[in-house]
Every structure is written in structure tokens, then in C-alpha cells.
Length: 147
Image 1 (tube, rainbow, N blue to C red):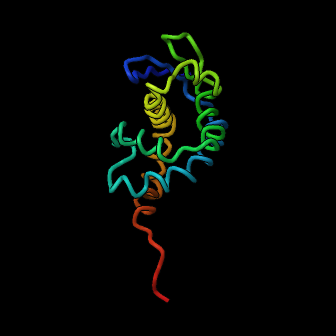
Image 2: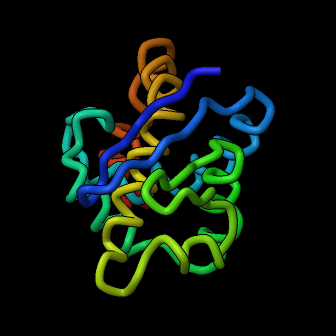
Image 3: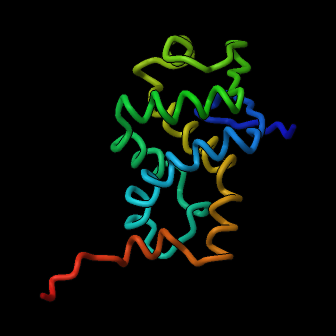
């Protein structure tokens, strides 16, 4: 399994590549959120090229308890996200409380984006190569006003 190191807010985190079945379950959930959230904001740029701070701000604006429970915590758990400074795996809400405070909460959103981009960036790149850019399509698609 491939391991990656991420530096967010001056702290080091590690994660492993997810297995295909777990990744697929999350992709099915993610596609319902990523396309609407990031589609219009990208304005023609690729998701992988998006500024991390901008992406983290968008995540913070759109994440609710349901997304945390159904996507973020499974993403962290399946990726085996580990805070190397605190020597703590981040799998649950309690783990997030140990690793983050209200003062560095924005770091959590940056970490969510970094882990998500690393895990699913190749999938979305292949999707764009094979069938076109669904994010661009979503940004350009507007309800028809013609009747």
C-alpha cells in the first residue's frame, strides 16, 4: 500500500491509499457533493490545480454533520490518517477533538481536501480524460428557461 505524508498547518499527517471497494463507496457519495460544490467555482481549472486554501474554505462552507459522518470520517478511517505529532489515528469525532482545536480547525478542512485530492484525484483525472470534464459540464449547465 502506498503511503503519503501531508504537512498541514505545520503538522505532519500520514495516510495510505484506500482499497478499491472502500474508495468506490466514497466516490459514489462524493460525486453528489463535489460536482455541485466545486463545479461552478473551478471556472475551467482542474480540481488538482485548485488552491488548497480556496478549496478548504469551500469545504468548510458546505460540510455539515451528515457529510462529516458519511464521507469525512470514513475517508479518514479507510485512509488510516495519522497525526504523527500526537501519535494518533484520526477515525472518529473524538479523534478530531484530540488533534484539532477551535484555533486550528481550518487545518482540518485543508487536511480533508488534501487527503481527498490524493485519494480521488486520479479517479477524476481518468474520468475527465475518458468522458469529458463533469465539473465543467456542471458549471455550464443551467436550467432551461425556454418553454
